[in-house]
Amino acid sequence: MERRQLTERAPWKALEDHAAQLRGTHLRSLFADDPTRGERLAAEGAGLYLDFAKQRVTAETLRRLVALAEDCGLRAKIDAMFRGDKINTTEDRAVLHVALRAPKDRSVFVDGRDVMPDVHAVLDAMARFATSVREGSFRGHSGARIRNVVNVGIGGSDLGPVMAYRALRPFSDRGLTFRFVSNVDGTDFAEATRDLDPKETLFLIASKTFTTQETMTNAATARAWVLGAFGGDEAAIAKHFVAISTNASEVTKFGIDTDNMFGFWDWVGGRYSMTSAIGLSTMIAIGPERYRELLAGFHAMDEHYRTAPFEKNLPALMGLLAVWNQSFLGAHTIAVLPYDQYLERFPAYLQQLAMESNGKQVTLDGTRVSYETGPIYWGEPGTNGQHSFYQLIHQGTKLIPCDFIAFCRSHHRLPPHHDLLMANVFAQAEALAFGKTADEVAAEGTASALVPHRVFDGNRPSSTILADELTPHTLGALVALYEHSVFTQGAIFDVNPFDQWGVELGKALAKRIAPELTSDAPLAHDSSTNTLIRRYRARR
Figure 1 (tube, rainbow, N blue to C red):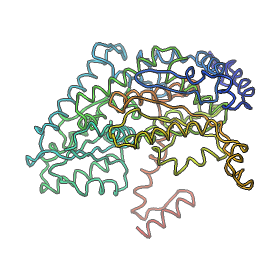
Figure 2: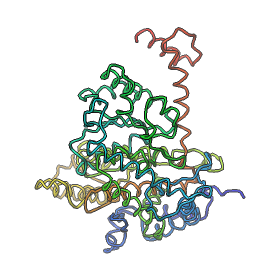
Figure 3: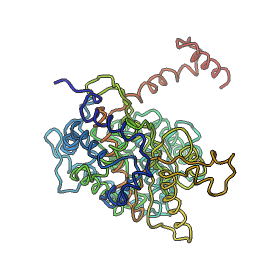
Figure 4: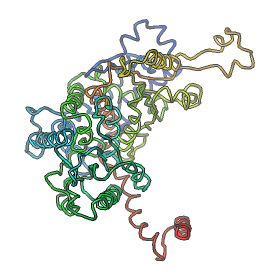
């Protein structure tokens, strides 16, 4: 059966007509015409409150967006994912990150086999190991207690762990030092380890295949660093390294005890893997009990997404709003603005989650798209961003929808800090929506020549996500919210959010070029690349 192009679907055309009708409508008018708008255009689930009243939508917009979701089969696609169907069609894999946080009594089948016993066996093994490190029974080769944990990975094997560690520092064991190495640039490793004692340091090597070039280059450097502290004694490796991998033979060859190898499965994609064994650094940091609270937060949002009607479904709403803003209002980016310093790496985490997932140019059947797919995600914590790029959001020529993320309570009750922080959250969203007219500026006594410079058009859309406090449960719900929002967008765009072929080409070429940099072999690249390589050879 031939697929209908997205832009040929009746609900899409209806949204195009609707967007044309709304184009001249300002948020000022939408609020003036509907005094209850702020209460009605909101939804709640898994401990998160989503206010989307400042988005440029009406009840009719939402009705038509839901109709689009239904026409694109979003509900069936959600059910297929949770059921364990092989919805990653280009790799013939199930997509079951949701199983990683499901309770023990839940059954999830892949190829007729219940995967939940394996999931919980790995979780239990992680808990035993994490406890042994935290309590000091797992010691280094010299008998010294482990005081430093260094996670070595890249992409999803790094971004999730580092984001989670920083987000959950109030719950972490402050007697342990955590570092994260990802970049193949030697500076990353050198700076992460410069003040550490190898005899007190444990490395977590996170690579499913144990062949990832960047990760294994850093792992080899870590291995040499540890051996240097023990006079080359290979027995030290088993006491200072664990593997998060499925390749037992390569792990053994490296010198790691396979009892300290924590596996995961091909139905877990890298950017969706932070609740797999990739979360071992997180579990060591916050402990198994808190880690299970994190999983519970993920699961609560998973269940909300699976069961709630789209009209009140947080991830579905956010995904549909992203489609609306990009495809019908012409906004190509989404600024994620967490007003909590502990979430400083959350936008970076979302960059991979969103852009590696939906940065695709063909539909599921291989047809080139005739529309734009994944929006660009970016951002920084507030209030720092206010003194950086908010100028462009407020008065620039580009429409940039914003997600504000904030919490009613802070971990650090330092008056008046949190009240001032929250005042800025609410003020920025209000200013973006309503702006300031020329008449309002002039009424303040502003010189006429300055009036144009002080006008704020407003009508800049935003959503605010509000929770009581940043806890492990809250973080889990927040990450799952964006995971499922990204899935929603992929379902509408008719792309596969779970492969990443675009990552591979540059890596393959790098493997070809690397030996050429240290030899005099003839070069057969384009003239630019050849010239750059020759210049590097002469100056390295």
